[in-house]
Length: 217
Image (cartoon, rainbow, N blue to C red; front, side, top):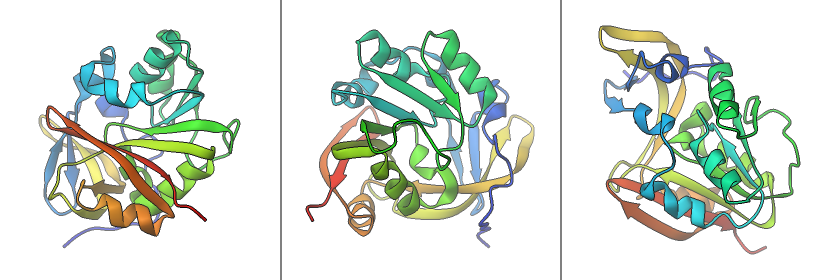
């Protein structure tokens, strides 16, 4: 039976992954999903380039992790800010010379309504377990012409909401927390129900990306 929850039981659920002790995500329906932990700690690569090249102004990265995207944007002269609940992630991001703030994505954040882009990379559309709520939050942070750039799962993955926890080499780690999975096939309908539309999509090396904007009034 699928486990669901309306409360976030662990404020920093990815600490074990950031420290290298977990590399998979266990979904409450029994599935295991790989986490690209190595990529989080590396420099932004060619697979990340699609998102980065569409950031033409101030950008906020929600769930920034160790901050590879914030670092890449900062080095390109783009004003960027990383946001993550994990103190470890924020320390790692700042160690790269990239600005970061330890805060929940739904808490008050700097310059709300004035960012040009919001990033939701590495499956962070799952944050909080309600992609519709998260997309509405993201679009509220950008100016009227702003965009949300996100990474999603492959076509056929659909839309799943429930709970997840980290999985290490010898078993589960930590408590369940709300999570969601969004496939490329589910994104248009999800975006429309959030007052958004898909303007661009891109796939490379089994990674899928999309750009969303507000629907015309």
